[in-house]
Length: 77
Image (tube, rainbow, N blue to C red; front, side, top):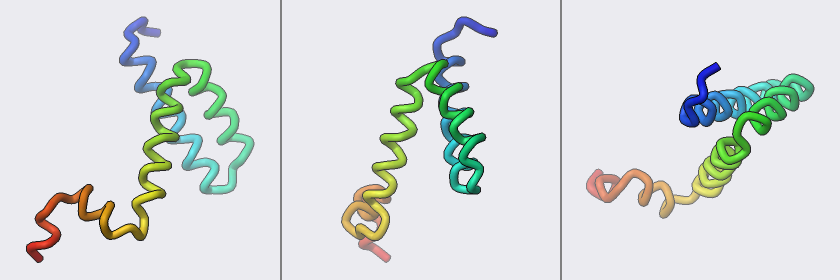
């Protein structure tokens, strides 16, 4: 395995995202296994995925946040 920190970070992010997919599909044991692997590789990457998920959840149904995310072009439509 490569010693490149970016590779480790990206691998951990991929595993964390797969863990979320497995959890959404109801595969809790597999989700936990993937999450544990991701945390072992790079806990910061797992935290970043978690933070992004929380940000996405906050913007759902929030028109002001959606407009901010998309930019001012939304007002022109």
